[in-house]
Length: 463
Picture (tube, rainbow, N blue to C red):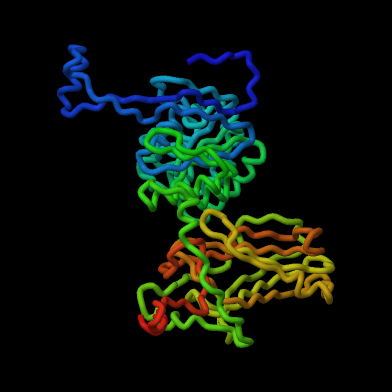
């Protein structure tokens, strides 16, 4: 398919009538006979990996692509990147494309990490001089230390992703294409990647492929659902994610609207008493393999941060109600998050805040001291030590990695100056959980199941 090269296109990516077909053979020698004889008798069956795909992505837009394994997502990305030739239709792209597809793409396993940086960057359009200028920054971003001078065939999958992502983050791409890359790697690096992607989205075009609908909704305003090689839905990211999940869990026969209409809200719980309620199931759950064990790691004073330096975080810890520091906590328990800081100059109206984030950098919950101290703020002088304490019930966290972001500021809720913002001040790992859905769980006051005319089946008492 041909495009008019002179026509002004506002889109960074234009896909029209795109299709990729492969021949499949029931036996290996049939393929050989087909190559030699070109006899119709030995022709294989046609399999369309993608068929009749049409969409465009505007400059500065972030689009998520979701679908089951084998739906054709990776094939579609390779066609857009130009690493595959289409059987029909065509793709038009504007600007430099940087892609992170399957692990190892664009890398020579025999070369060292350092050599592969130059190789991969050259494939993405950088000159050797440009790579020289950016190499130190690439190495800092990858943060693989001495392994940079080891052959990449010795790397773990996480180290592979670190190096590959570090390169594409420094090539000044106009279009960035990510295929499931963030599924591997530790929480620190995933957080760093998500921060980079959010900055990139302010000026560049992003195509983001994943099975995680939460990250699509979090990163993208728009999503495309690919199903059996065809474009099934192109709409708002939240709508596409809901309908994809509805089809996934219902064999593809229902839409999100169908599933939503089946459930009605239960009767509201009675008014809460003055005494804070306790989830009575916790005693039973905490004696099973579903107990939400959350491991806590020490405060990382060297974590990535920014701010004007007028104040500095000294320590961040979780304590129990008896002021004992915790290295392990169980979801549902009351805890205190203590943030100790020091002022390096005079500060009026100091504010301390925190945000709990998951591995993808999604904000789960948080708070700050402004509303509690706004009526009587205590001015600080140079070298004053100050402390913020947040007492709350630790949510029940699904298994995975989490981080706590800490911020020191002064001013008001709306207008303030950031003195220090630490992205990953405290890391946590949830090892097990009773959470069945959602980003986190909260202790329930009561859950019941009843049949009219029979006693209520209180799960807390009957399990």
